[in-house]
Amino acid sequence: MRRSFRRPEMPEATSTPETTALPIPLEIDGLRMTPQRSEVYRVVMEGRDHPTAHDVFVRSKERLPHISLATVYSCLEALVRHGVVRQVNFERESSRFCPNLEEHGHFCDCRTGEIRDVPFKPGVKLSDFLDLPEGVKITDVEINLRGELLRPS
Image 1: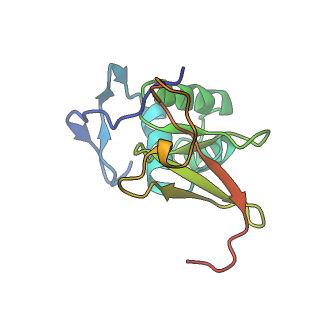
Image 2: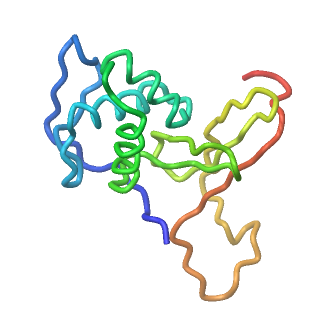
């Protein structure tokens, strides 16, 4: 079963002009934010474009030239495990990473590859459009939609 996501309490954060304008917590849910984790976190949070691990690696190298792809994967895995970012999977494509921890779905434009967050309408329940077995308690929802964005919004 997947972990239920929530935005963790953010302890006192530090940042310097040389590193980032985004406040980076020193620790999240017991996860110490090393310089590598902080940079990976910054890349995912600032881009908000659902980057792949390779995208994160390329962007991280701008500030941490010696970071390895293996380290980026390790950092992303730790951030996902601690509920700081979500891992989004579209079948056999590379995993994407999403900073939005609210319950929502994802739409993938098959023409451009762009992935957008799709918020749930307020008040709508899964039982309104799914015939769920009686006595089921849903603990996590992952809705991924594919199509073409006919006009940019």
